[in-house]
Amino acid sequence: MALMTHTLTLPTTREYADLTPAQQTAFNQQLDIANNTEHSTVYFDAMEKAAHIAGIHTNASPGLAVCDCINHDTVCGCTLIFDTATNGIREVDGIEPGHNFSRLVCPTCAHDACHPAL
Image 1 (spheres, rainbow, N blue to C red):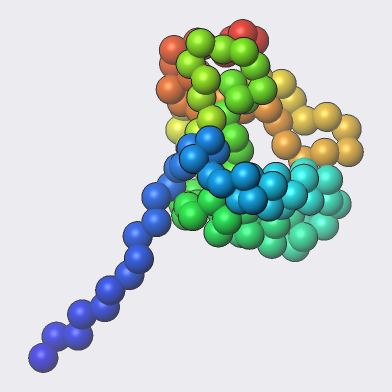
Image 2 (image 1 turned 30 degrees about the vertical axis):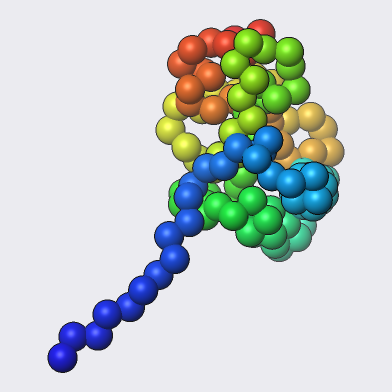
């Protein structure tokens, strides 16, 4: 007899705009913790919690980002949350001293060049 296991398959991306206000607040808090810590265990824990809040699974890395277009008045209005190891992302600006994150845009926005800094 074959044993079948069932696993829950989570998406690897999600629209930040689709999160409830409470989820957005909790997600932002975890990203702030990850961005400002000097300890890798705190970073990884915060990223895991942020992924859980967003209801996504990170595949290639323990890092998440929200497309930087969310911070600008762009035509696309992208709010995609994605794994930072996703192919095709572009860095808009490097890491500021004392922080862990670069400003990134998702592959679609990087390809379409809808971000003002690209």
